[in-house]
Structure formats: C-alpha cells, structure tokens
Image 1 (cartoon, rainbow, N blue to C red):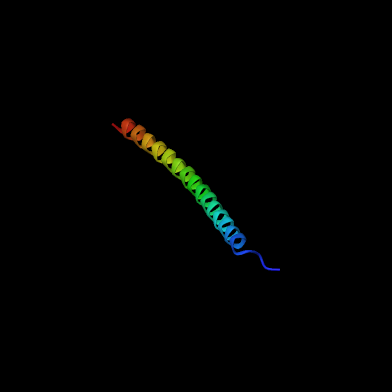
Image 2 (cartoon, rainbow, N blue to C red):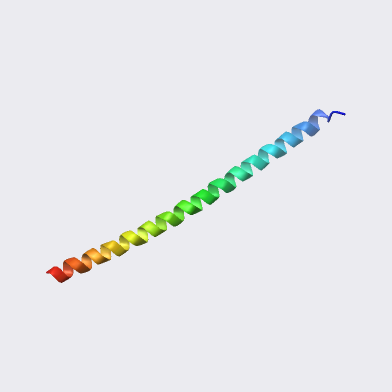
Length: 60
C-alpha cells in the first residue's frame, strides 16, 4: 500500500528538518571547540607576553 502524496511530503520535510538540526548541532559543537581552542591560545599568548615583559624588565 502506498502512502498519500501529502504524507510523503510531510515525511520528506521532517527528514529535511532533522538533517538541518543535526547539521546545526554539529556546527555548534565545532564552533564551541574552536572557541575553546582560541581561548587557550589567547591565554598562552598573554602568558608569553607577561614572561617577555618580565624578562625585559629584569635585563634593564
């Protein structure tokens, strides 16, 4: 028995929405991971800058 056309359309729309939500979740996860990496690198950069300032201050 075949499904009515509007039922197939609704199922296709549901699958499309599911794909979009999964894709968005994946992008959100990737964005959060990148943001975490950026925060870590920024902290390292700030630490190195402080060390460099401290070393140049002690040399003078």
